[in-house]
Image (cartoon, rainbow, N blue to C red):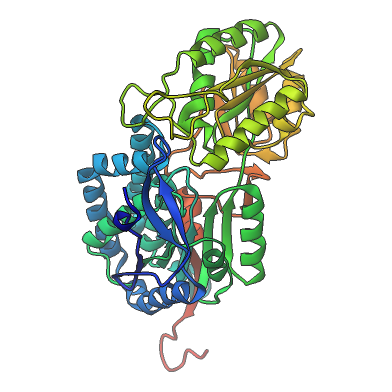
Length: 494
C-alpha cells in the first residue's frame, strides 16, 4: 500500500466528518503483518475545542429530550450493532491483532452496556416523600451534567468506548470521544452507526489526537466529566488534572493480577483457566492474570500443565479461526515486553517458556511475542511488581493460603484476583481478605457484566464512581433535590 492510498481519519464535529488540519499523524498498523491501514491525525487544541463547542451547543436540546426518546436511539443503535457485528469484529482484528473470538467478545461486552443504557428511563428515576414536615414534600431528580469526554485505550477498541458514551448520552449528556490513536477505526465505525441510529448532530463528537488533545479535554471548562481507561501514570495525570479543573473524573488504571492455585484444585482445569487469562488478548488487558501463586504441592504439576498448554497455542492472524494467540500492538510494545522477560530471568526467575523468538511463517513483519512463563519468582522482583501488559506469566510459590494472600495484597494494584480450589472455606477466606475490587472463584477473568460496576481498587482506579452499572448512571448525572410547599388558600401563609 502506497502512502498516497492510505486514508487519514477525520474528526466528527457537529454531525460532520471534518478533515483535520494536523500535520503530524500516527500510523495505524495491522499488528499481524506490519502493514499500514490508516493514519490518525494529531488534532490541535483549536480542533478539539471545536468538538467541545459543538457538544456544548447541542446539550440544551438533548437534555430536554425525554428519556424515553433518548432510549429509543439506543435501541436503534443496538439493532445496528447486531447487523454489523461481524464487520465490527473484523475491523477490530485488523487494527488490534486480537483473535476473532476475542474481537467478538470485545464488541459483545460493549453492546451489553448499550442494552443497559436502553433502560435509562427506569435508571434515572428519583425518589419522593410527601409530608417530610406538615405540608412540605421532597423529591429527588437525576439530571445530566453537560459535555462529557471519553479518553480510550488501544486494548479494547469497541468495549471500552461503549462503557462510556452510551450511558452518558442516554442520561442526557453530550460527548467528545478521543479514541486511541493506535486503533481509531473501530471507534469511528461505532460513531457512524450511532449517527445512523438518529442521534442529533453535535450530541456525539470525535476528536482524534494524543497528549495535546487529552490536555485540552482535561482543562476546558465546558467539559464537566472525564472518563479514562489506560496505564496508571496516565490515569493519575488524568485524575489530578481533571479534578484540579473542577471536573468529575473516573480513571481506570493499570493492574497486576494475582491468581492463587490451591493443591486441591483440578490442575488441568486450573491451568487452562490461568493460561487463557494470562495469554488471551496477548496479555494486553487489565484483567489478565500476570502472576500465579502456587500453594504447597501445587507448584510442579501446575507449571508443567500450564507450560504444556501454552506451548500448544497456535499463533497467527486473528482472522484465522484457529488462532489462539495474536500479536502485540506495536514494535515498541514487543521490544518492551521482551526486555521485561530478560530482566525477570536476570533477576533470578526460572525461564520455563520463552516467547521472545516467536515467528509466524508468512507474517514476518508482525509484532510477535509468544507465551512466556517465568517460574520460582520472588515477591520483590520488579517483574512481579510492574504491569508488563503482554503474554508473560510469572509464578510464585508459597507454603499456604495465608502467605499467598499476603503476597497478593502486597501489590500496589487492586483490580482483580482469582482462586482455584474445591474448598468453600478457602474461597471464603480469600474473598474476605483479598484486597481487590473484582474477585474470581475458579474464574480466570472476573469481568463484571454491564449492570455491575467495574470496581478496581488501590492503584488500579482513581476516582469515586466506577465504570458502568449504576455507578455509571450516577457518574453521568447530578442529583437535584426539590423541597416544596404550596399554600392551600389565602389564609395559609408562607
